[in-house]
Image (cartoon, rainbow, N blue to C red; front, side):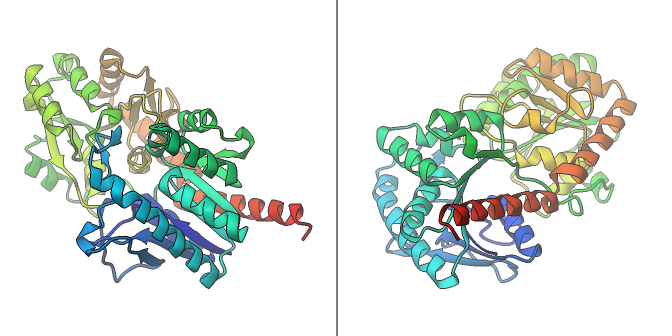
Length: 412
């Protein structure tokens, strides 16, 4: 099968943390024997000689330094477009040249199926090409694109056009599924498939953990509660910080490590200081892809306190932490209910409730036996259901189903 993937964000260089889950999926699809080619917008930082999947870029602006869209740069705080006139001036050019590049590419490689990640802009571009070529279209919705699609009448129309044209829509949470239906998606077209983890890479290990503890200033007897993600509203890290006073009242030998960067970093630092818990919180910043497994293994407990609105999908960090054998605590929104079996590999708590989040974390801090039991269950769940190999097989099955349905409709 020849699969053409369209995305506006992709790792630009080795160990880049920009949407590695898209690359992981593509590599695993190719490992199953399918031919995969990825189309992404040009970026000045885009370089890689080690790729196993063919990647093409398209340019949409002159000079090269005006390639400012994609790679998550058009979002602010995870909730809205920047008020930047240049972004809106460049967007039509990106749509036009993305459409022309995709049309040329699918004809060149004789693609069997189009797989567009994010409704806007890629679902719309893919829908235009599908209307011309009749190549089946699968649109995957990872998260923030749902909010962008609701911003104005034009975006809503573009999103509905994409959803109407798509042969299949995948989401990685029930929240996103509901949001897609609210935009006009046919519920019968929607399938829930998450983005996963490689258990051969993300696995339990003690290697270099003590060195990392020393570098971060964490003592041997201190337990570590960790969260990872962009420092934006929907990740709910303010809820985690608000839970710290209750946690340290019972377990003062705790450090909370929040890995990532974003627009809200200063606000989160100020919040921790105002609550008198600044000394318990560590912000290491962004961590390169090849180093992040050490951080997961540093943690005793992994926490994802996501909030809505906006709707979001299951964070890949949750699955990667589970793959490293960690007990998990998460709010009952986004994709957390897919990954967390309450009382089996972690705890689900009501969103925006620091008290309930603290209570769940305290239960795990209180029992090493429970942490180990939940951690083993987390690892097993990834091995059975959430490994990239298993998920790539699900995508292939969906692609084949879409192709068979198209052939049936056209009497072939």
